[in-house]
Image (cartoon, rainbow, N blue to C red; front, side, top):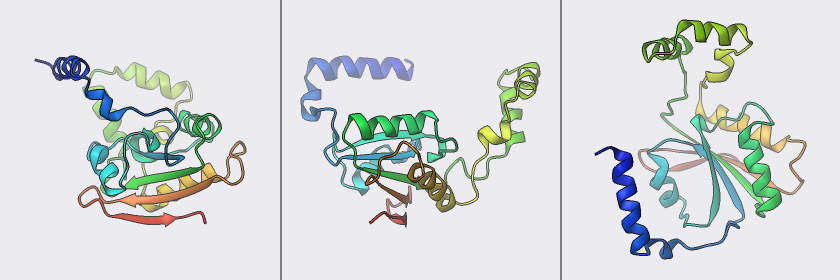
Length: 185
């Protein structure tokens, strides 16, 4: 059975047995916080446990590497909606050690795309259309610098109201230890 089929079978049982009742909450985050973090699978439960987060405590936004490069991308849109519509008062960027986005090899990535069936013509057409694979997919040297960069983009955003605190943390996916990179006071 495919993994999706297993998940859907579990979901039918979960709903029938009213397993959702233990997680009922409203859409306003209890801690009035947005956490922007990496899509890293090791953090799915660890991050919540390491920071004592319960269902409904925060709004969670994720992408590869917890990287914001453009001030009007979908991550910033999600953060701004959380601030203006969902009463978030703090934003915390959380990167992690041993991230797959650190030191991404663009040539190896595009080679893998070719191996997986993306025609060279498509890659060339995108490049000629102005898509810069280096700009779109490059990673970072240190997770601390990457977190600081994302924090600065958020802090300097022209639509972020004053008074919203923006913090930067790094978590160790092996131990759950969290270190502060930058903290608003």
